[in-house]
Image (cartoon, helix red, strand yellow):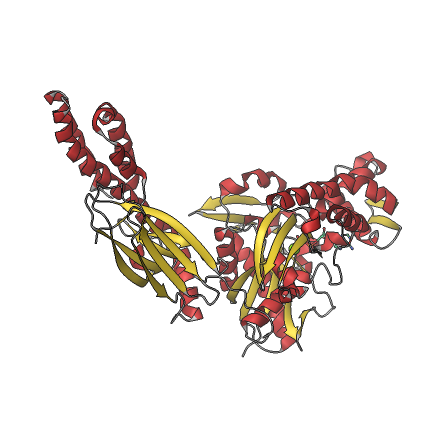
Length: 602
Ligand code: ADP
Ligand code: MG
């Protein structure tokens, strides 16, 4: 069996770990360093440099060196617009994917992250002397599905088989062996290079629940470096202050001094550029503390907000774990102790703890660690078929189990006597493209469309067994089936389905939008056709009725086309132009039919 590695794909630094003789260890390079700076640079002849080699080039080749790629994973140009001015490289969107420009080449964030993952894979293979494929990769707890999907895609591109995406705070808790506890509340304080995250977790019978997360995606060690630099700059000759290279070198010297000051009372900031500049200053820990206090204080506010969101007070927290390089700073440690009223745990290296936990999770997946409960998540989304053949997701991929979700649906046709509950698994937008798990009918009382209320409940137990119940809320009549969602699917098939979901994402969405627009048009047309008679009975003049019939014909014509935008437009126009009639005759039933999600007729 090939070793399964655990990977911390960080904004500033990344690491790879594995389980050695029952304990997780991070894998070092030839020089004993476990951290790989998350920096990629395009070198001479188009060669890609990763890690330490690339990091040095942030000064000498800043236009072809990229960092903080994690900020772009699974995001749109709109999402990252506010951050662009901070970056020396060009970013644009093409085909729904971000493209980062380095020299004359463009890369997606997934491809850039894959460079880092490939480097970690290579390092692990060299160390272990065998091929490495399966991996667990960590992401921040607040990452949404698109960001998790992008991380998984980066793994696939790098030739890894991503068995699981794990939350960073959960990994930290696993590294500290906290899953062995029956229950308890854990706060994970993660202060890295460019981001600060606080997560409050509850452990119940070995299962982790993220109660709340808070933080600041632009608050980290970099801000402390900057604050120190601002403090030292007045001591640098005016003429040198405009030199970009010198400023970068000074920034790195400030970072080194900051790190030294975590264990020493005094440090030197030295920049030596022969023939250009010579800077040699002494900084004390007290001076550093003075400039960084405002930065550190901001983490306190986020901690208090996270506690509030979790509905807890500091005294409810049983353990606080320190994660991230910046938690080595003594002042940060005392602030954490003060905020939570207890000494934080820091026995494990804060740089390594997330990767170590990922290795523990990998070991659990390999079935080697028996005394820990398996923390499972759903590998693929689960949902039911909606009217028009679309997939309605109830439990998204990667949800932790056990899980339970309820959603209410209505009927699409008048006097429907039964609805079909078609249970599906997969990432595609259309029901037919997903895997069918079960199908059953539920009788409902015949009513005008949109009035019936059918509640569908998905319950997944700790073994991954799905129980689907549908209930007519009016009569209380219900029916249920039991299915085993992943049963019969190999890991490869699951990955294939995830990949297909990514590949077909756009065309699927187009199709789904068309189906949804047509469905809405059908419902409106159906109601409108009935309304002609009602309008006549309500005394609407014959002229207006003729015009109304024409309007219906026009909507029906557009409905048969394939342009969902045109159908939406026609619907909007139709609704506006027939408002006068609707006000008179369209009853609440029709109105609710226009909005509710509905199920097919049996
Ligand atoms: P990320 O999770 O964002 O990848 P890390 O956890 O690797 O980041 O943290 C990197 C940050 O930690 C950098 O700002 C670095 O300067 C800081 N750091 C590392 N070691 C120390 C130290 N001894 N004292 C203070 N800061 C440190
Ligand atoms: Mg980190």
